[in-house]
Image 1 (cartoon, rainbow, N blue to C red):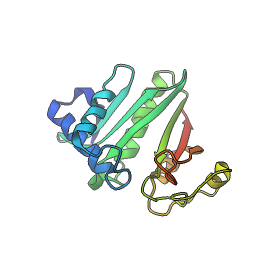
Image 2: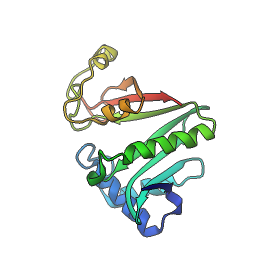
Image 3: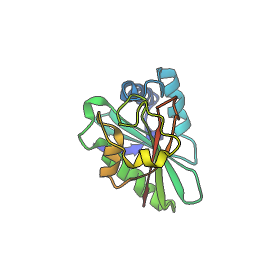
Image 4: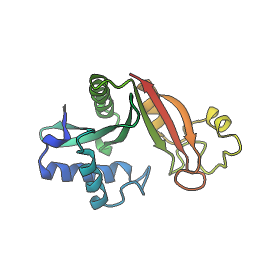
Length: 180
């Protein structure tokens, strides 16, 4: 498997990348990209000149995509990361994150951040009213169904905050970051 620039892929491969986004998020965040057309829009926005967009490819088959965009002077946001379900837990996501980190460091970035939504009840925070003290609730964060925050922690990211009700009542966005 190799990690390549998303822009170097053919139009048909980019269409496949859009389908991959729908497939990768359908269970965890079904409203993220519910249709291929919406996912194609995301793929096209990833190709903006100030962003980094990468794909994991082997024998012309796309197994994953990742994007990064600058958000502050020295901080970049990882968005999105999608790996086809059949290729998950095989190192594809890790390889994409590591290559994104390398490129961000080359661009002068110091921190990589991300939001990892819990729209489908994959953490113990799902369905809870975390107010008036969201940080206490966050301190007790637990995985209940294979939430991606566990994957990101293994890659060195720390939980740095929460946006309660980001996707509706009891559906928080868990904020994570990593110094590069």
